[in-house]
Image: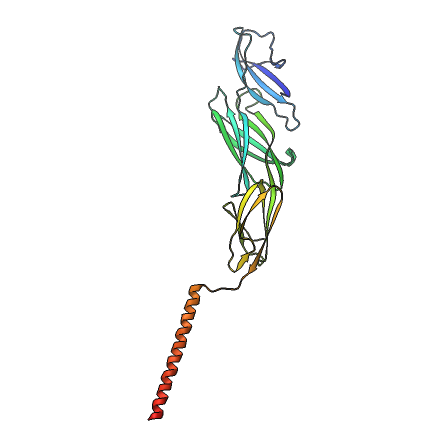
Length: 300
């Protein structure tokens, strides 16, 4: 690996630091060591221009001169994988960092996972999210939620800190996961016209309703095919009611609402017609009655 691996030899009885050596040909060689029990703490300092973090890889207890050669296996928690899925419900990504805690000396470890999210692979403009964690033995999924703010490809950098006793301090980095592409999103804009200013309108995208009072609904969506439906508005009809869009670049969808005349429902229309008939019949009956009365007077 690019970087430097080194070991710190400590007396196991009084924790006095004895020596520090750097790895050569996959070996840490300590010379002129008196008999006794010791602890070797192993560290790795990567050649990186991003952070100047030294990683703690674990320790090994040795007994001199019972054995002169020991095999060391890194046993501090490390980042196995990073995955992401898109949530249309809130226009954001669910990011899961998988931490493997294969530490053989502690059942549980505490610490912090920090993620840097950038579309330029630069820490200077990255969004920073962090979580305190309790790492149990085995695989630990750590979830984050991120809402993109602009179109582009996004990358993630993960730093894992663990709180554990060792010569360089209790809290120390045990792993770094370099820049990795997690998502690419494009601008999708639904642009409304025809509604009075400030009117509430909405779309349903893949089953999720998104509301707005401005004339534009802007989303950042990854490549995929989506179904959308324009929610009805009383007194207006849209030129598009439902459709599908395939996102593989920026998309603009114009939606025009036109006002429609007020149309009475069938029940109301029937009631009015019946009422008119009743009124007309009543008028006719009254007229006939008055006519018969006149004829009776004239005959007399």
